[in-house]
Image 1: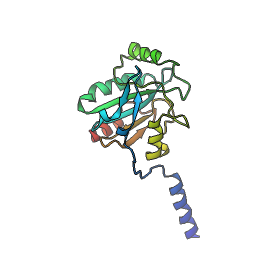
Image 2: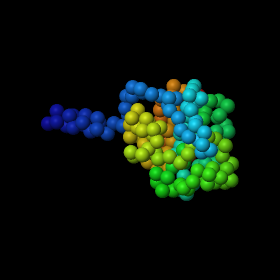
Image 3: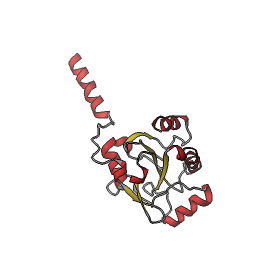
Image 4: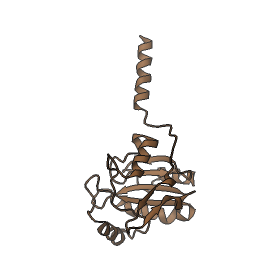
Length: 181
């Protein structure tokens, strides 16, 4: 009976373990994405910097986090942090046009950190960044909602992920960013 119990516990632990020991055939720095203004953002430019990827949306209850994302960018960009907003309509809460998103972010939140074009963040049509994140970090790297955060370390690997409820200026996120800078 004890063997069955312990076997069951081991199976459950294995089944629910989300962390993946990744080989990282590619690092984050091997990828790129189109900016909201149409130029290509080559992540090689971010080499040896930490990057906070955030899937954003204009009509979400978490949209006010743009304010803290800008504050985070202002406070840590000189120390080697890049905040990268990836507008997404995966959860049906984003504007339909990149120009509208750009204007919305600038007018309402004075955003000047990098933004990409509107991109899918999960499923078969997800941008390659999110497919890469899932492959290398597992299900916990797949955004569950808007303003999900993926922290990339200076080696171009995923350091940690943070739920939408985690505010950009939270002590939990700040502590992790400061650890890897």
